[in-house]
Amino acid sequence: MEGTWIDWLMIVGTGAIAFHGLTYRDANGDRPWVHLLFGSIALMFFFRTLLHDILGIW
Image: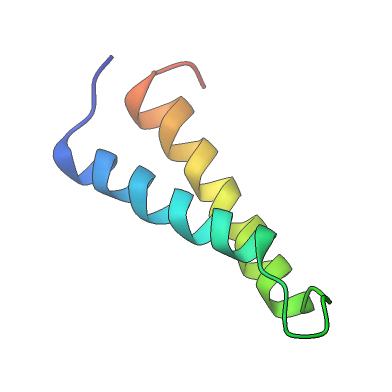
Protein backbone atom coordinates (compact mmCIF):
# COMPACT_ATOMS: atom_id res chain seq x y z
CA MET A 1 0.00 0.00 0.00
CA GLU A 2 1.33 3.32 -1.03
CA GLY A 3 0.05 6.84 -0.99
CA THR A 4 1.14 10.13 0.39
CA TRP A 5 -0.57 11.96 3.22
CA ILE A 6 -2.42 14.04 0.63
CA ASP A 7 -3.96 10.86 -0.83
CA TRP A 8 -5.08 9.76 2.62
CA LEU A 9 -6.45 13.23 3.32
CA MET A 10 -8.45 13.09 0.10
CA ILE A 11 -9.80 9.66 1.06
CA VAL A 12 -11.01 10.99 4.40
CA GLY A 13 -12.48 14.17 2.90
CA THR A 14 -14.28 12.59 -0.03
CA GLY A 15 -15.47 9.72 2.14
CA ALA A 16 -17.02 12.14 4.62
CA ILE A 17 -18.65 14.16 1.85
CA ALA A 18 -19.97 11.01 0.16
CA PHE A 19 -21.36 9.63 3.42
CA HIS A 20 -23.08 12.89 4.30
CA GLY A 21 -24.43 13.43 0.80
CA LEU A 22 -25.83 9.94 0.42
CA THR A 23 -27.36 9.62 3.89
CA TYR A 24 -28.71 13.17 4.42
CA ARG A 25 -32.45 13.69 4.83
CA ASP A 26 -34.23 17.00 5.33
CA ALA A 27 -36.92 17.75 7.92
CA ASN A 28 -39.59 16.06 5.78
CA GLY A 29 -37.54 12.89 5.36
CA ASP A 30 -36.77 13.55 1.69
CA ARG A 31 -33.36 13.32 0.09
CA PRO A 32 -32.52 16.46 -1.91
CA TRP A 33 -31.16 15.66 -5.36
CA VAL A 34 -28.21 18.02 -4.90
CA HIS A 35 -26.96 16.02 -1.91
CA LEU A 36 -27.30 12.78 -3.84
CA LEU A 37 -25.50 14.27 -6.84
CA PHE A 38 -22.50 15.59 -4.95
CA GLY A 39 -22.42 12.53 -2.69
CA SER A 40 -22.16 10.22 -5.70
CA ILE A 41 -19.48 12.42 -7.32
CA ALA A 42 -17.48 12.35 -4.09
CA LEU A 43 -17.88 8.57 -3.93
CA MET A 44 -16.43 8.23 -7.44
CA PHE A 45 -13.41 10.33 -6.45
CA PHE A 46 -13.08 8.29 -3.25
CA PHE A 47 -12.88 4.99 -5.13
CA ARG A 48 -10.64 6.43 -7.85
CA THR A 49 -8.12 7.69 -5.29
CA LEU A 50 -8.28 4.49 -3.27
CA LEU A 51 -7.92 2.10 -6.19
CA HIS A 52 -5.48 4.06 -8.33
CA ASP A 53 -3.28 6.14 -6.06
CA ILE A 54 -3.18 4.08 -2.88
CA LEU A 55 -3.73 0.43 -3.85
CA GLY A 56 -2.37 0.68 -7.42
CA ILE A 57 -5.00 -1.68 -8.81
CA TRP A 58 -6.57 0.40 -11.55
